[in-house]
Length: 165
Image (cartoon, rainbow, N blue to C red; front, top):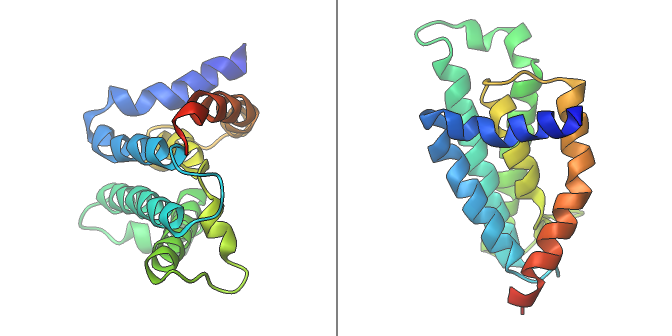
């Protein structure tokens, strides 16, 4: 029951703060459009995923730099090695790679997984309040994200199946 409360907190928190709504809204729309596409690898899915990842990464980068305006505290080695900054960097890199791959219609070597990332917006949505610094990273939150990933995937997969080609 505690994991359900934690998971609910992750989903509800962005809608309790107006400055997070503009960031989380496009992720929900991206997830919807990704789920309406085929489960096969495609350049269209890579473009959609790339946009979603870049959108989330841009929002998190903005949040990071606006936390300490006018100071250099966000550029210290300690700040740059924080989990939030590392996750943001990875999301931006994967987003750029997916978007470029989709636009060029060519995946980098060992990068064809970028066209299979329909469900990736679930992870962007679930970590969004943590990455936006409204909640802290914790093992309990990470466990809640992982435990609910399979049931949410099944619900979304079965629920959108009639709408997919």
